[in-house]
Image 1 (cartoon, rainbow, N blue to C red):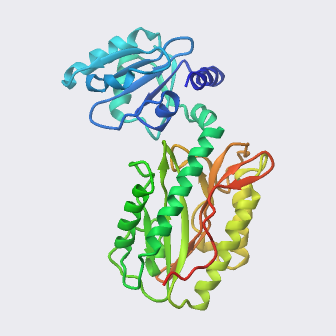
Image 2: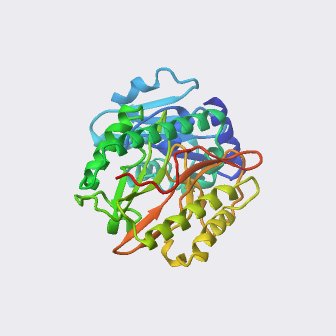
Image 3: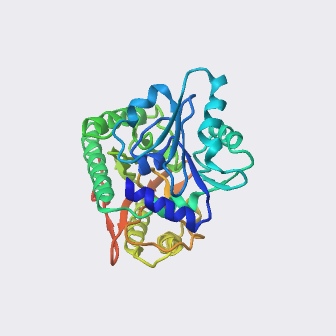
Length: 367
């Protein structure tokens, strides 16, 4: 944790931020090991280079601070919201941040914490600090990769156990419920990275379908998009299965997505842009005649969050670096008919990209 805080201070200076302010979320956990959930009571930690961090938090959360490996200036508050602004003012008012640039996470910072921060720090400017946080989190160390690899194994084992119970007539909701239980029983953290997507036949044409009461039928392609978490790190996988007899076009789109997935996994290496990985993946589907039916980016980074930097899309010229982890998840979606997506988790190595996921990708008839 101390090394991460030192790196944070260096990045703050490099990006000309006087302070960084974080509320409950994955980046705060990454930097400090502290875990808070977003609730009606605000939690805010402010980092200033060369000084101990300041945290404002509810009194009931104080036990979480007992074993921190670094010094921290602690300002607890009670249950009455009318007293909170005064506590924030005492905690932050003396940091000298009036008129200064404070970095925040736009996707995470709520209006609740933002208003308390802005009021306590006078005319400080709260700006997008995403570049700082990405520089810290995008490249994973060996322990982080090991945790993600374990999250992949848990997910794959859980789906294998789930598929053994699938039959014609089993509903999407039934499969999702069983998969949820299997993820926990196989060792996932309680907080899953996302609710499993289980979609078959016409529903599989919706990339973010919600499991429904529709029963599986012969001729369906069944998409399962799921993940596990291990010690705060996540996996995000997708496999597509055949139910009964498939028509020729369903086989054709499956073959195209499988080839695109392989091309995407092979494309990653240090110095290759995210856009290039997307282009090489997408080209396979375009060559098969289904370009317009691949309706989303090729992938996204993952680690403590299911979606984080780097984003594997055609306009992102960010270069991959060793230690970056991301998904490769091409898909083809035929509205009202069927859909296919095959997704793997990869990490950039010194000379290529290793797939952390190993579950068979080829067409498999599960019933």
